[in-house]
Image 1 (tube, rainbow, N blue to C red):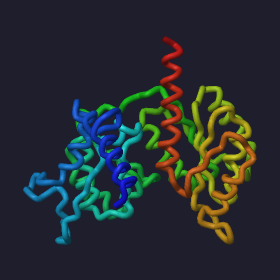
Image 2 (tube, rainbow, N blue to C red):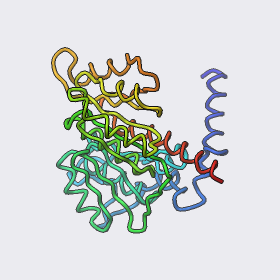
Image 3 (cartoon, rainbow, N blue to C red):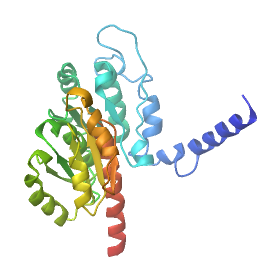
Length: 291
């Protein structure tokens, strides 16, 4: 290892140890204790029946998890557990860690076979299940979701794009935003868009997410008409040469409408986080101006 790498690791260690992004800043209150709690939650913690939180129920080996409970305090966006790629026992362990450190656990892309075990494990908690988005949010009894004043609009081109739009909506709501939705207003019947979009813009929305598959044209249309940032969310709806969202992604990236940014295919979580970060900053500036 050369001296430059040594220096970079030393700087990184200092960054994580002290300062505004440091670990020490997450040890002053319930919501700020995420770093310590997330690291240690699976080291000796047990369920009510005496089994470790991260012990699989199917007899397989234990895989330690380290949920990042301090992420929202550090980054402004919560950690989201990706359920599609994890065993149910891992999801349960990570959810317990996040509940202990933040009072809330958000799970995306849930497999159907994980839903019932999670509902049973967390029956003493408030569980919000969103079937369309394949998502679940678990709240501790005393958890209170914040309200930031941010205003986010979510538009879907067709009904097939709604699951990704709902995923984005959920994340923006969990980051404190008020979300208004307009669904099934794609370019195949563009007249359906005009009145709802006018109402959305009149309401003072700060940013708009537009989910579209097939040719992915709707985000460019909305960006060309809107004075606020637009986030294009390509969905894996489509077929043929540009199927599985490829045509939609490329179309959005090739837009000639200014003010359109694009996330990856089906990335509702990323779209929701980005929109909420923008909306929350705008709301913060709005509040300062009014003082």
